[in-house]
Image (cartoon, rainbow, N blue to C red; front, side):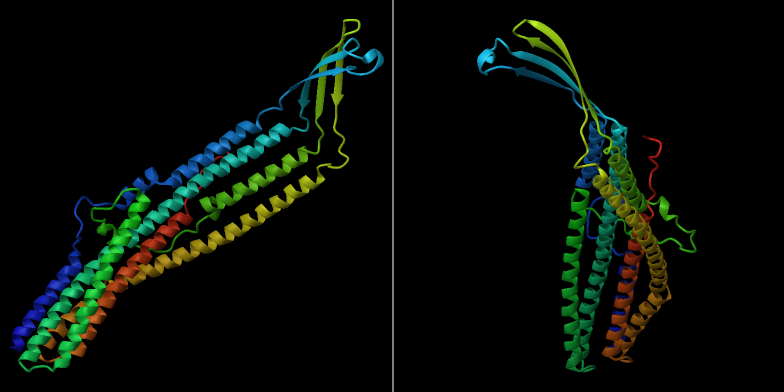
Length: 420
């Protein structure tokens, strides 16, 4: 009887190993790759609309900044509705004037410079939004793939628990074990079924979250070959933070600050308003030309306060640029370290450690069936195998997440310097 039980457990062990290697998916349909998910998200996500509308608003702002002040027409009637000779309209004087504001100090070009800087900032922000979306979709894809793999392990563990319970009942029936072993096996089976139900719910939630990001339900299997694939990682060349998208966004804000300082400086130059018109004298029916020049007196607002405000804001942008550089350097270094550590963990948990855990579980099943090992030793071997497989999945999740974060942090910034 012990040999029969040992043979049954050996068969279960071989089936478990095959189950872990194949990790079948319960979904039907074509495989959804990460590239396809990213393409779908870029076409349907509101994030793309956010970036494009920001660019359109900045372009419209540039058009407005380049417009000159509007002229105005002034109609004025004097010497009416008075007393004596000014009663009625006989002594009235009607003036029709044309007023033209003249901007001095290159105000228009300064406004355009601010608008150009904001257009560049809007374009960079659109790229930042898309890169953030790419990171979110990648992380959601990683979570969904990991949930699929954990579900496969949960199915396997539930099947092993069912087999162990059946074997424990047979051993108790023939008097080869105490009833406590059957109770332990029953608890193990209940826990395995609970973990299986939780894994199924996690798969449903993670696939639904991925579907929300890409704008379409995820009905087919995921690309598990991509999830299992890792690249060799070694010493890398230093990354120049100044060429990244994160630093470019902060530097674009600094460019806006510099342009605003120039604009505030130009505002200190008073503008002129030229007036030209004709005046008609009702009493004599004569017409005369009228000319005038208007210049504001900077008695209460000389523009110094506005320039000081612009300079303070520019200094704040400059400080934020330095802070963004330091933060980017720190984040890149952390992502690189996380990537290297995750790769080492993947190689460990998928290599000798996993092989040893699989072999240990196989030996424990055979030994328990032959009566050479206790149930406690078998359960410990099964627990070690499950933990090693879970650690391998966690390592793959950490690896892909670190790689995605590093790609986001090092996304290159485009060169807009020659466009304006």
